[in-house]
Image 1 (tube, rainbow, N blue to C red):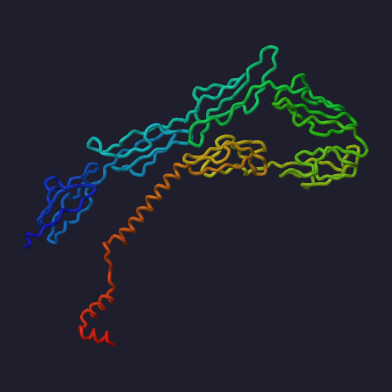
Image 2: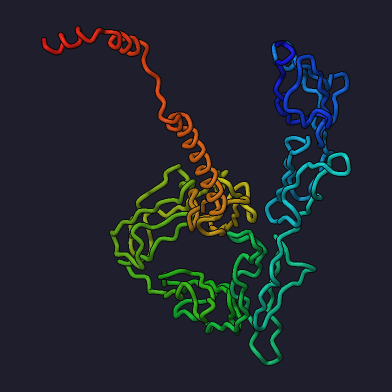
Length: 447
């Protein structure tokens, strides 16, 4: 009878298969020794046996793993990008990603496969090209500095044409430079609209009972400034410096010079501070508060003082605020993003920065913000959120995991063909009741 007992075929190995002479057999007599050969993509480990034997217990002899996965060479470095490789063995993958401002040209993923009786990658390393922008927009009556190519972080500067003889000159209105950056879809776009070249002419400003101290000239174009002072016996109402705007007007409006009287004062002048309440003029005996800007103080250390109009444009005590240099920690913090233009160790009011998000994230808010002082930016510092396509991938993975978990629960508890396990105590009770004589059962029913 022993000779009739046979082993079933040995379990399938991932890394090896039976030689051809054994591969078609459905059973094996006790004592049969079979031989394996490494599968493609694997190679034999020296010193390890390739044989297994059918034992008298109808089990195959145990064996150590005797084939190891072949290894591909490292795919190489990726200029302006990153190579992600966790393993180089047969079947492993290498993925590629580019730094911000660059995009993949070629396959973003390659696999170590069987090739030419060995293993090799099924593709070549791609390259990262800098994201291009369309040529900068042209402007009327002006031009921009040309570049060999317009790619990520390329900056162009605009200038106006010279006016023809006898014509008014052009003024550059707007930001003179723009640069190539990225939009939400990581395509190249220009950072903003180009400036304009316009003829801007502001009228020659004159102040009655006052005079210019700077800004003399017969012609005033965009950005030109003029400073005034009042004649003796007069005080100024308004700002002493005005600037020509693109709409051919002065801003702030030009001041006026009012005659000094015994019961009147103009607003006190204070540097690095403010007057509360601010009015064009005050009556003798009226008081105002002078408050220093943040990080500034009066010589005695106070941040606010009260002064009183004494008439004849004279205040009881007017002092200027002195400011200490402040090491600002106001640099904007952007999770999953960075400042790409304008970053400084500390900022002054009016400084601007440009922000972009890392790959896979989209910007919510303005990409250009301006420092307003006291750690505040306008508009508010933007945020970077996961792109829609990344969220979609996460959702798909989550749905697959939930489906697999539900399938496992179903297989575990609901697909046993209606079978159930009877408690042992219940089983004994059922057996005893089955063996009770019929007469006793009838007696119990009568009772």
